[in-house]
Length: 264
Image (tube, rainbow, N blue to C red; front, side):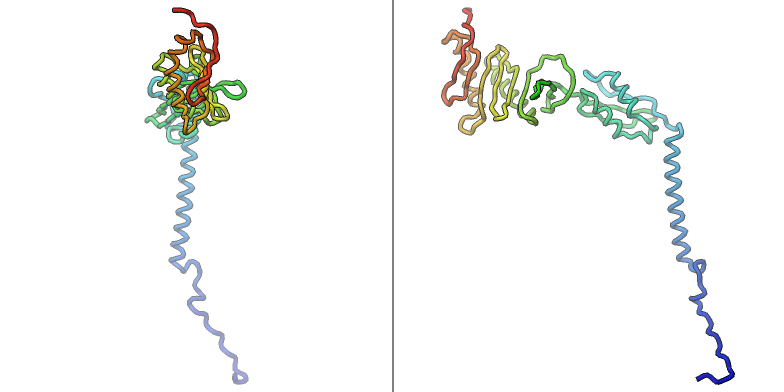
């Protein structure tokens, strides 16, 4: 108990209580590092924005590697104007490539920087091997990979048709049929795969060949072999020019006659 008439002394503050932000070196170093990092990031961003606006390293040319058969110079110039922006370092190569790949005959485009002021463009063109007849009667083209694409062509090509997504399968069958038909000097000008997966051919002499569905016991390839074997005998023995053959029978075929065969 305090003595009467004598005041108590106030307590002296400790050293920890008197230290502030500026008395802590570790905290000051950490804050300085944060400021330095933020300032550096801001300078990098400002430099990048400045390079896009200043006329340094301008793009002056697009060099096309190799020869092109379908893609024209006018199309390349149009795609270049619509997609190429920025300078040598800031140009968006993905956007430029996408612009070229939208051209009708371009299957794939590769774009690289070509020091000091250009772009090197390599284009893989579609190689059209057939026309693709759609359900509505419109036509597209099929390339050598079995891919359907849109372009205009005046070349005489076989016609394919089938369910959506079946172009590669039809192309593979066409190659198989063509190899077999070469033995009798004929070619398939049309190959059709129905919705029920039945195959039908039209040959260059106008003959229609129904091969039906591919079955394990009676595959389409075996029916094709029977047709090739029977074809030379039809005109000799029946003296008619057939209009259509139905090869779906296990051991024979049905024939729809056309005009009478002309004597040689």
